[in-house]
Image (cartoon, rainbow, N blue to C red; front, side):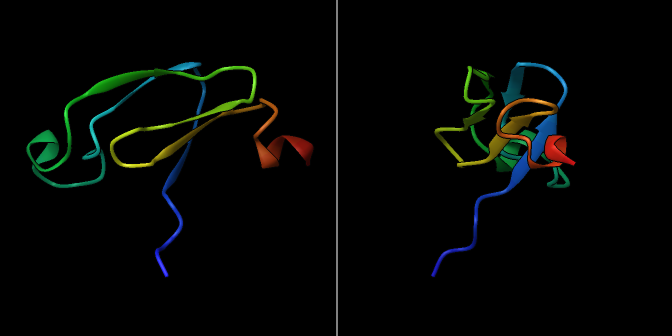
Length: 66
């Protein structure tokens, strides 16, 4: 069984992902930097690392319901 993909809550609809944000040493250990746009669903998944970016206050933000 694979672990669930990492998620990040973000404040803007346009995000960049290089797969190495949390890794010491940076992008050399990740993937090419890609820019992603969150659509009306309120989230976008990176095609390289499957990290999910959720727009704060958007339809996919579970914390927005509280």
